[in-house]
Amino acid sequence: MAFFVVMRRFYAPNIQPGPHTLGPDEARHLVQVLRARLGDTVELADGRGAVFPAEVVSIEKRQASLMVGVPECYPEPSPQLTILVAPTKHTDRFEWFLEKACECGVSRVMPIWTARSERKVEKYERWHRTLVEAMKQSRRTWLPELLPARPLEEAIEGLDKEVWRGLAHCPVPEHPEWKRQSMVQALPAGKNAAIAIGPEGDFTPGEIEHFGRSGFLPVTMGQHRLRTETAAIYAVQAFHIINSKT
Image 1 (cartoon, rainbow, N blue to C red):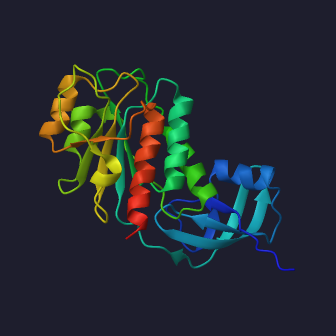
Image 2: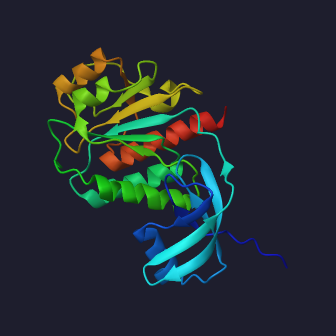
């Protein structure tokens, strides 16, 4: 009986063929957790589409040196999805979103500060590490881009002018009475998209008006009110399903 062995994958940005020393976190995992031995083979992903074969040639308590071979390169996924999302009050919920969004194929995450944001502290390094771990676990070859958190207006200004734009918000009396389309029906196949998801208290009427002036189309995810992280995952998966047909 034949067995398929999945080679362990590690993150190594800016890597090239030849001798390479793993970063501290990755080396600790290889040496102390996996208990690697000389001659073991692993994969190194640079997060930009290149996956390198490598052999362990030196092991110390907190360090590992590898000999890196010629990579196999994978094209950048297309079309691409950017999620504008207000970080949740509890960072573990936001990290859950990052992990699952990476697994489902998001291209870019743009954390935004809004008038009703309950979280005002950015944890960029921790959030980035969550994406790295999800990339390795899911065996993605491209690491989703995590942009620095910024005010809503700056985030919108930084978007590509040609991207399709969708806005998910709750229908309450104080909000503009715009007709909302089903997200699944509104999303165009084969086109880059940006979808905005608000904080636990939703966007303010003024913020929704700003989205409207900036070309965002109001969309709905059904009759139920979703948590921020759930709505964001819904958006990622809807985009994936629409574009898996192309």
